[in-house]
Amino acid sequence: MLKKIDFTSYKTILFVALIFRLIAAIFSEGYGMHDDHFLIVEAASSWSDGFDYNHWLPWSTGNSGVPEGHSFTYVGLNYIFFVIFKFFGITDPKMLMIFNRLIHGLVSLLVVHFGIKITEKISNRKSAVTVGWILAILWVLPFLSVRNLVEMASIPFLIWGVWLTIKDNHKWDLFFAGLLIGLAVSFRFQVGIFAIGVAAFYFFKWEWKRFFSFSLGVVLTFCITQGVVDYFIWGYPFAELVGYIVYNMHEGTEYMANSNYFMYFYVLFGVLLFPLGILIAIGFFRSPKQQWLVIAPAGIMLMLHIFLPGLQIWWILIVFIVLLTAAFLGKFKNIQPLWIVYLPTIFFVLFHTFYPNRQERFVLTVLPLVIILGVIGFESLRKSKFWDKTWRISWTAFWILNIPLLLFFTAASSKKSRIDAMYSLRNEKLDHKNILLEASGKSSTSLMPKFYAKSWYCDFAQREESSEPLLVRKNTQFDYILFFGEDDLNKRIGNYRKIYPKMFKFSQCDPSLIDKILFTLNPKNTNQYIEVWKTNNR
Image (cartoon, rainbow, N blue to C red):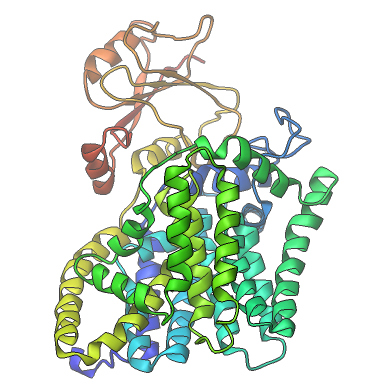
């Protein structure tokens, strides 16, 4: 049967990509990280219920009166999603999230589609097929594509915009490209670095019509989504953007600091597994014929950062831009079209590399473009028998490693015990009820997702040390107790039975396999077993 399948057909690639994203949407419950749930789902769903979970809105009780720097575009679209689905009577949290993941999975097919088109336009069909299969079923992509991460949600609009800049056969193409990339910027402000790279390409080629057409599109989208929206919320435009810049200038550089300058390259090429990731890395760095245009300024920038640690990052970035400008002048007239993809991509990666706040997921936004550039760059090497054989061996090894990981992660649920614990309480009247999170054994508590309990007004207290009083707070009685971890569980339950003799087990929630693995590797990932007990206090 496999012999009848045309594995070089774009339709086949897209169909397989669709199947795995549908599987992920249905079976891959939960959330991968803090931000994709608590900054998106909890915020948007609470707004649809007339509550403000994070106190972001200026009229909400608890708001500081100062914008915190969160773009409302993506969370606002999720808010619209919840309003529409709840209007039609779909209120079950798990069912809502299945539809939410389905939408994300379907939209992510644009990444595969336009990734293929970009590659074929710049290179050839053979490379496009290779890129298509990687983007379709790289082990981590179906899982990440259905998550509520802004780093992932912005990719379809970014890569669609890149395709229009490559296509550029209609007078409106660059304007529409600007609109799409501007939307990606509005999803995640850091994508602005990529947009600057695209604009720089046209600027240094002195192609003013293209430069202004693209820039106008970006500015127009950004002004509508950030200027107009913020004006109605805060009373003045770009309030959240200003808040974001202020935060990063004063506090952002101290958050999640990391001195590993190669971290993002490890992520980008590491997810492609060994040894294919190494070959893609070779292809990526040799894809443009004039790599020194970026490598030389980047090297000088790194030296400044290492030997002058007191020099502000903003000054180093200015030096980088000046050096890059000097390198480009006089060189861009005859430069290959590949640079319109390479320049903004490497600019984006280097910016994040030198900016002190580093998290692995930050660079995922340009992963598809790195894959495209890597495959194209390595293609010319395959004219040599040695490199062609090396590629074929690596390609085979990639699929041997990728397929088991793909099958495991595509259907993997994350943070399952936390979700199931709160979901078990969805039909309880939790408003103004007190819930104790008890982890006085060897475990620790977690921030619990209220969305799955369908209540925003319950109150949590934590007990993580056996030396703390059993009731933690004076004059507080608890209606539910969530016991985290199995260590000393019977003893801990027995202690509370003395206070609540009528308490009974309400539900027990096991972590998923991936949660168990992560907890074993790093106990800080508090993905442990949870028992929910009802005290019958009221």
